Image (cartoon, rainbow, N blue to C red; front, side, top):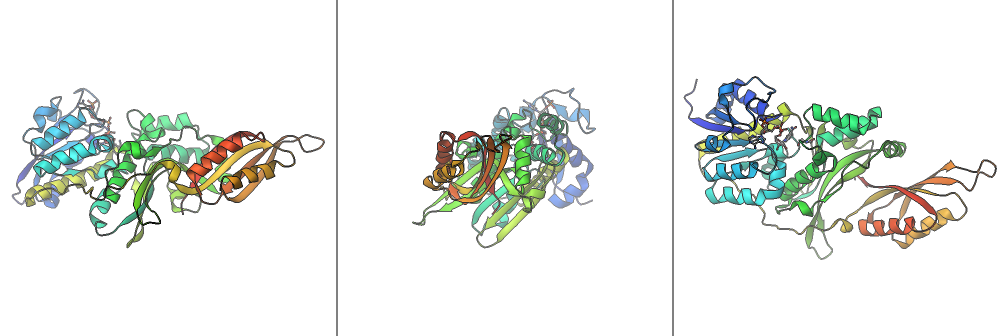
Length: 440
Ligand code: NDP
Ligand code: HSE
């Protein structure tokens, strides 16, 4: 075997992802050494509780509860604890101690990314985070390196495995939301607090990370518009299916160019309708997919496992090998580029298509009233479908009807003000749902 230099690797966390990273590091040590050009010595694994059950059979003597001491003297620190603290403190400690950091922690990077990257810049260290967005899918490196010579215009993707798993099972099997969420948790897809998944916080963190990289701009989490999937019910899924759509939780990051040439960005996460023929509609289970549209490269699509311990471990180990190569080659780490510093616009400025579902009085003039309100609100109708849901048995009038209105592209602010006027119009009994239509 080649006489490689040994690099000391400290692992913080041995949960769903960390236990698999440790297992692969130990099992494939020789192969990884050949790829990295250095022997990767797993010096220890810091956890909260030494007696917790692990997903892999790992040597007990490697475990410690003293992360701080383990970090000192390490060349590479892998942070897989999750959450903000103590992850933030330990990552900063690792950087200050001269280590490169590999992390999958999107919550940390989306909230304290600037602090972490600045700390790394100051000492010439590098922070690797391929697993922090879209699990096993290589998307950070393509945005950071492969597309460094291009201009990204738009990123649209399914970046949360848990919600895709839930929506997919509701769509394909009519499964119950709570039951499928429990299964996603058992399979290790969901965050410790699954609210992060179902309310869109996890996807928003990933969107902030992707948009920051793609647009060379620091995108704070509060600049990301976020809606989760808890309001999506079986009736909405059925109605989407009837109209030829599937509901997906999407992250959309867009570069907007005004008439005067000035640029801004929009970063948003919400459940949206996607045509059943669109490639995103066939992303099933906990898989993720990310479309990237770049000025020169055109459309690119990245697809694969967005969650899961061993799948995510693959991305983490890729980063460990990169970090090891950098250590061997020497030189300072590549910092994050934030030179463009584009402003993020509020959701009201977004332009997209919508599907509005209303329950209305089924009587003469109602459709004309609804059409008039839409027209006054500068919302142009593309399609209308009416279904009688409760008619008078004799006259076949006087009951209720369900109106499903598909719009042409409209400005979100115009659309939401129009929906408010519809709700107050006296002819609309209930606004059942308003969903954006994305995908082209
Ligand atoms: P888990 O909750 O399964 O594991 C967390 C680990 O960190 C546990 O081993 C825990 O120790 C340890 N830990 C937590 N707090 C402390 C602490 N204060 N001191 C020392 N150790 C601590 O998390 P995952 O493996 O699922 O996720 C790890 C990271 O990877 C997160 O940032 C997550 O967002 C990210 N990620 C996860 C994916 C997935 O599919 N699971 C996919 C992509 C990214 P103990 O075991 O003793 O409790
Ligand atoms: N909870 C996350 C998901 C894990 O479901 O996608 C991967 O980041």
